[in-house]
Length: 103
Image (cartoon, rainbow, N blue to C red; front, side, top):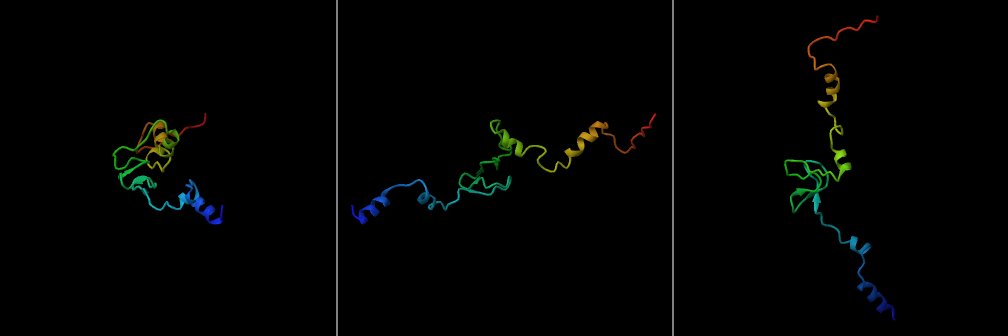
């Protein structure tokens, strides 16, 4: 084979790698306004991560790790972090704790 035929044959071959990656320049997903991930499908108008615009958050029992990433305790817990202490003291308000004297 001549050099020209070899070059022609190499162009005909389909490759799964480098040449295919050069064609990827369209975005199917953009940033979701609820979860902040780049999982909002532009054509479907639905987030593949949190399910937005559905009222309920998307979650499945087969995704235990994913559930753990966004469950209670992963944020600031502005209200919940004081609950254990308040529960222990019977949710008392507006009173001083009784002094414990050493006997």
